[in-house]
Length: 172
Ligand code: FES
Ligand code: FES
Image (cartoon, rainbow, N blue to C red; front, side, top):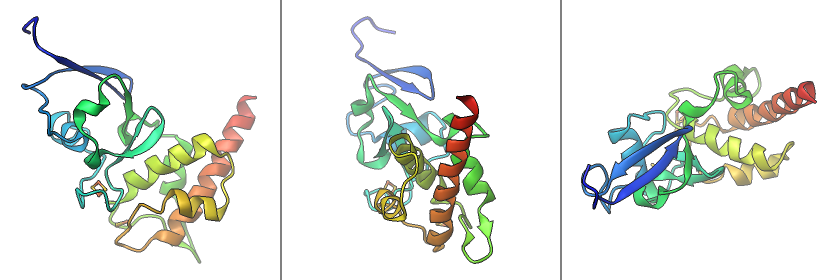
């Protein structure tokens, strides 16, 4: 590696990636492109690619962001978490996987929108332990589910909040 090369450093799911500007990363490259196409974090989806659907949502320093609307270089020095960075028994993952209750329907059909909803739910529950339904709707309002699973998704978020509280309670 040239000593004059500009290095972009991004921590992704706890692992530091050092990327050389001009070689690994270009000024116009989006974070979604870097994550999916260059680094194989394919959990996030690129659907609209214009900030309108939420499918590409990841966490940057704990906040939900649209990776298709973020330049890869803007992530320099920041911590990114993709859905691959969550534990299999993460309460949000479990709640979405289990949500198929009669009366509310499933939280996922094709699954295209699911990683984005999960990451925004993680961000929401990191700020509010027990969100109300209006808070859930507000937090997830930037997401589109083309399969129309909104009622099931909202129930999954409520269940995730319950699970997370119980896990926290068990630890304390
Ligand atoms: S793919 Fe980024 S918001 Fe739709
Ligand atoms: S489950 Fe298909 S888009 Fe949401």
